[in-house]
Length: 309
Length: 278
Image (cartoon, each protein chain N blue to C red):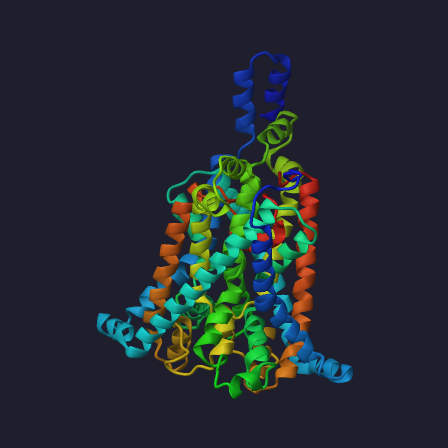
């Protein structure tokens, strides 16, 4: 069919609409190919994403609702929920403050070494979670650099709650800031300059002009940061020391139950985290349209650099 | 590429925000990572070399490297397919499928780990049919690859999908009107344009797979010399309080991640030069 189409098009260049339909029909796949590709893609996603997702709930309810409810109302599980919420709140709040400050400096001003700073910010994404945890053990652990000083003052960071909070904050550091930098760069300074020219203070300009402009991007970053903070396993596992119930977060609780062969209970707690993941995906999809930040998740910022893609 | 040359900005707060940024990064990122190098420097060079080239550690590099490579390759192929299907076709349930692609980003890795183990174990939903075919998935290197395919998939899809959406369809139409078959147009016109994006996705997926811990430890079985990944070797050394040894292996991993980062940035540059990313 292409030769005849081509011949007709060159013969009658004035008939633009016809040309367009012929050409665009030629520039797509026949229905059979199309549906085969869709089927293969969906089958692949089913094997790797959907089946494991369904399996969490199937395994959780395998021994009945009673076991499920009991696993979730266990005091250890409830304490894990509290620590997970605390870790997520700490990580989100500190990285939010940092993210706004860093994005303001990077997006609104020019200075030397900016690229290095941006690369440094995305560093936690390129480090293995286990290494992210161990650096804090080397720093604050009993034989670490600050270890003797800390123990002399009766302070404990590693194998204690502060270690969990610090490690979680480290691994989630880039999420919010890497949403904000491209967004604030794309928006430019005109609105802020106008507000300042009209006599607003810098702080008021930020609250009334900048913040409303970036609020959806900010929310998007918070959603991603929170999901990772609540689900972090490797880094937290290193600094936790698995002291029950003091340093056990939800993912660590899942691990402990699983290693004790309490599979139904492990999956019951896992189903809670899975629900969190699903809520995250829905929230992300809802906010995505409004946040004019690039559609790519924050992890890609390391590859993109600070520039809007 | 907003080449917006900023003159002296009249906006306030530069000193405060930059100062806070530097302080935060120094305390939370620079100082801890510096400690890692400091710790490995307490070893003599020959001791360092002995640790990072011991049999068990080398076996873990081989597994981590090859499993990450295979998983990234599988994700490059199927991620391209998924991205294409999502960008170009309409079908029932497409929005749900599109959202679900990000599941590996949102699902805690430990949950992914135990769930994949349950599914791909010999008694599992997919593991049982595989076992009848004589294929053991969980607790073998194949299991490691499966976990890595899961966690790294979104990197390829989310890198390639926007590029397909922005493809100029006139090029394809031109190819078709010049008599190229649809397959030839894909191979000669579309694929070369997508290549930088696919390779970038591949590099990101590989880098992530190399360092992955949570989803792998459950499905791999953690047998030294056979199914032990490098992050687990570090973990084991830490549990034995062999901090210098752990730091030595970690330095090797960091160097590997650094090369991944450089490769990714070069691919991005290449793609940008070819106009893939606007």
